[in-house]
Length: 152
Image (cartoon, rainbow, N blue to C red; front, side, top):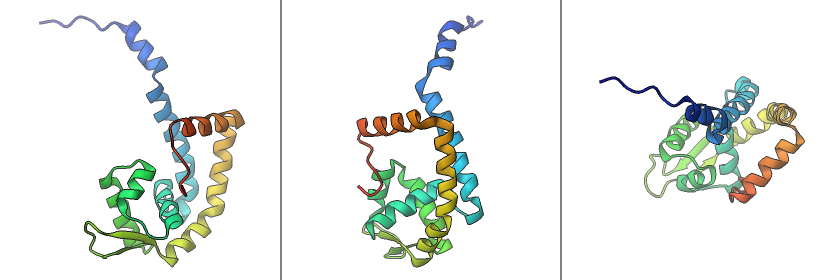
């Protein structure tokens, strides 16, 4: 049985107007800026976000980090294990479990301090790309969606 050709006007509308596609593409570009800047430190922006979120709390349960950063438990678990091997994070109990908490180690804090200038460089480039009105719009959207700052 032959399929009828798709109605390209509907597909064109999705391809040209889909907010999700635009947000994902923008995310990839901006994430790439930060990842490139942080690469010399052996760090990805997603890992930096986890380190900053944990550092602001001192010691925190993984579920709280997932809630703050809106990431899946499996994603956090993989990153936490990698960062523990690198010596940037530690956990109690070390083997994990339901009551596990994680914290940034002194080595992790040193890494954040060393990487700060690279983050500043990426931040400036991201602001240049999206413009001041884009930065303002992002803050307003985040506020409207109840997406607070990492220290909240």
